[in-house]
Length: 105
Image (tube, rainbow, N blue to C red; front, side, top):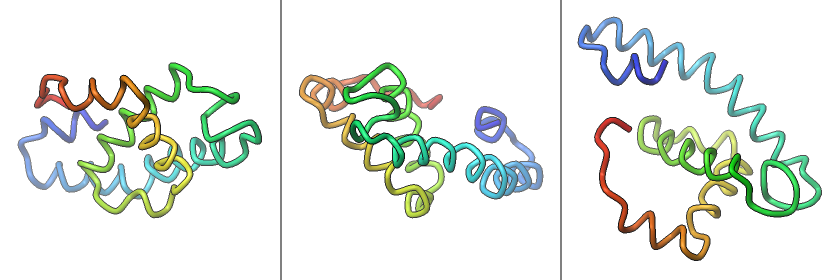
């Protein structure tokens, strides 16, 4: 759906897609992911006590959400804190700072 929003040229359709994302998609999925992090007694990750592929995916996702939907992080603090922390891990932080820019994201 985000892909459709990014490439939609009809402004009216684009606004409807954005509204659907904000009112349905974001609460449904970010709420679930936030609960995973919040309820993980082993640490601040999606699962277990160390970073996993899922955490890297989520770090990218929250980074995109921060950019495309400013302010969305306030309702999902554990999720966004976890994602941002993943992006500051040694090696990851340096890669993020030097990675090529992709306008499609």
